[in-house]
Length: 409
Image (tube, rainbow, N blue to C red):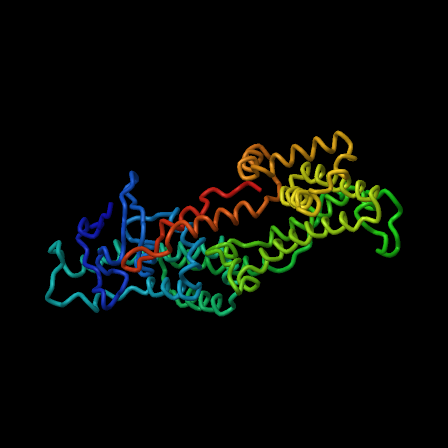
């Protein structure tokens, strides 16, 4: 159901004309589609970019959920620089003297002074406060936009420093500048210090001085799984939400738009192929059985470490065409290892449902299997159109791609 809200009619408030301030254009079917909700804050189904920024910083109400979803997904239809420019324009509201005539009176028949005061209190202050609130959320949760673009950060700081107000707004501006500096400091390389010493390195044999004979059968399965998990956590932790929005990892410039995600994808692919390679190229049947056994032992430790990415990478290798056909090799595995592999293969056959069930009961930290989430995002993007009639941005389509409550990984 399409509903054109008329909040402004509830208020005796005259707003600037649209030609002076584009964020007060009258709502119409050509610029915004709204749907009522029980909390009286309407759901935006589709809108122009101008209307989205208006509702993002609306003077009548605040919608924190919309702010979070918008800042997570906006890059699929708007650049960070364009968004910051619009927010600055939204903040710079025309002075009432520019559009209130000397002889004109307001709808409420109040004096011009009271009219101006109402305009500032009921419109200017709420809008400007909410612009700063959006900027705060942007800086707090998506500072990578500013890390990637020095000009964007420079524009933000210049804008904040031009605000000269003695009200609460100025306090918020000062807070934002402090947060920016804190974020810049925290983005620098840091050295980690642990309270407890790491466990001793496990190895079956004396570690050779060179790496010629240093392989999967030399390293203890526990140590192999530990090091793999540390590496994969580092890769996973570097992935930013901006690298997932709009399926940019499937585009031609994916290495530029999703560098960290592509590193993790390449690592997982290379690890799976490497495991396939060393199994197939084993010097003899006995060594092949030993390598497959070792891979399953490593997989068991990865399960204990809650490294789901590593577990499913190993399963992917063992279920590949080149390895799955080695029936005699699998027959030589111990009964315990065969049962373990069968259990994990059941998870792999219906991995989405089984994986979600495991996540419900797992205690963090863990490393998720990213393929599940990448597939979900692809389905969302392919299922729903990006634009509605009148060329409105389909905002409702982007909501499923945003998760209000983060996973506890």
